[in-house]
Amino acid sequence: MADRDDVRPVVLFYANGDWDGVAFREQLEELRHGLDLTLVHVLERPPNGWRGETGYITAEVLARHLPDGYQRFQYFICGPDPMMDAAESALIELDVPPERVHTERFDMA
Image (cartoon, rainbow, N blue to C red):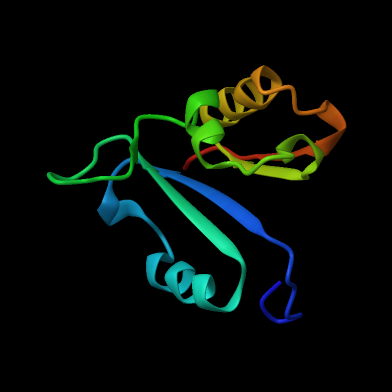
């Protein structure tokens, strides 16, 4: 999207175990300056003083950050099975039409 100067808004929910495990942290921060990107980190084990989202991606976490009209968005979910199941359930709970949800599952090695 950055290479195409895409102006569509993007909300990225990025779940990780801890802050040190956040891959591409610096690159994502740079992309926030070139895209209409809202980046929401969700940490299972946050560091002391963390003011962001904690735990898992739930319907409540999504609802706090998605703008009005979110049911018409396209959703792309990628991750291991437990995270995928939780994210898909959260979107169903928020009445996102299933045809707007695109998934790619992977196993952790």
